[in-house]
Image (cartoon, rainbow, N blue to C red; front, top):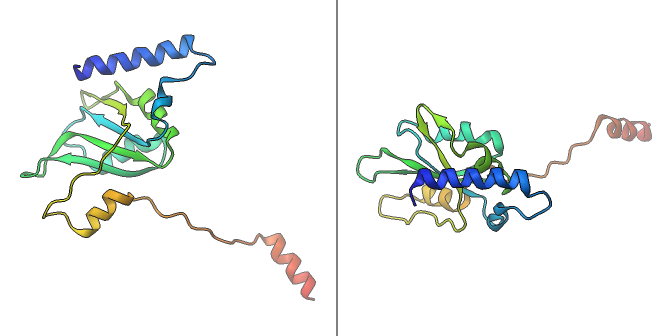
Length: 158
């Protein structure tokens, strides 16, 4: 199917769901196991940072795979992007599919079964690790005592 036709069909489906689908399951539910989205049709001049800036308004972006030409290294105009929370994919698909960036229409859609790029002889260890784990910081548990609890401890010690 033509990518623009597909984009228009997704927009129609979302609009129909908004008007008639109260209480019914959403078409997004079949993608609830994946936090990956496909983004296509953007200008070749956009970088990973530009795309993260645009898409981070709907959630924390933890991984991005900007597909590039293997010989020249130039962008091919599409990427795969992963959010920390799967619910962010619904917001991104509903709100960014069909928008225009510098005169080009974006196509944003869910990805049900993302597979990281295959390694080749040029891929170093750090890049492979990023493909598999993403670039988000690991959650850290920090034990912070509030001022009140510090004051209570001090008053008990006196």
